[in-house]
Image (tube, rainbow, N blue to C red; front, top):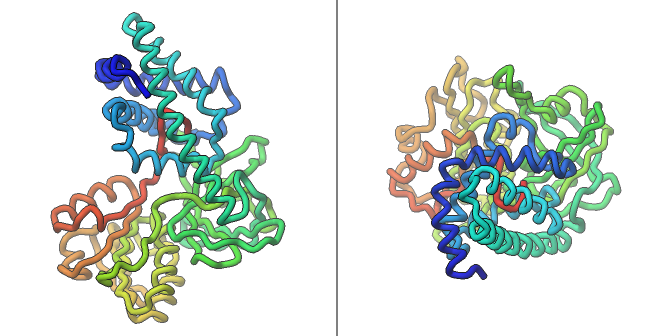
Length: 408
């Protein structure tokens, strides 16, 4: 428990740290990777290169400082980050590493303003946050062991490779020991650990796109090309597309994540899924589960893509439309719409907008789940707010680095 003086010191120094937040984050990561290179595999180099990881940490520092006297207000963020930590195998012994380097960076960036009183307050604040995460993650690890039968990373074998679109590859992964798999909660993800040909390792999170209850886990990997000469291409995505073969071995965490499909509400309201590009992966698992659980519930999927070649799971979705009269599929093309409407779907050019929502949902009550690029998430949130959809009926998945003062 922080003292009143420590809390006051945190709040007083927060504006100064906010002003230099990204500088602080860059210094902390550089310092930690030099002092403790053993933690580097937990971090995505593309997020480091682009600055996304640094911005995420800076944002987390500011948010925690704002609510340091009321950490319960950050419960949603803690849940998201704790699930990410558990998927990556973050353990209690990792927290002192981050804490030590963070405090050294605060001292380096703040200079003379980093008095012993300031450093003591931030050390206490970090310890408080670490305790919150460690306790929550202990509970999550126990739950994983009970539901899935393992924690950490377990060997799986690539049983099948299958293109989902021109730029997305699905990998069907089966446990090497042949043990049966517990069904994931629809919407969850796994961490995939692989040794690359050059001997380095990659640890990445991917949503599970399979229907819960299959004898395999399926991840669907988009080939991530370099956005510029200065930024790296997706190391694991290129390896998966070009070299990872049937019979090869990877290791998986148990399924994690809080972006999961809720039970059918008592009022029977419709389910609306809004997918942008590869953001369809967790929603496809939800779609399978929803259609199996409530065959009479109206389900709408709006799939936003640039063109038909980049539309994943076209054949699978067509099969589901044919099999389930309560399921409606609408494809929205932002660049090149095909001359003929895709099988079993409605289609139109443009982006997800009010006119489309009027056409496919109208004013009927619905539960909304959406996933895709960050600009799409922000746009959909604003649009649904304007349509008076309560936040309790809006659920979305953020793709990117979820950072905290605790770890990756």
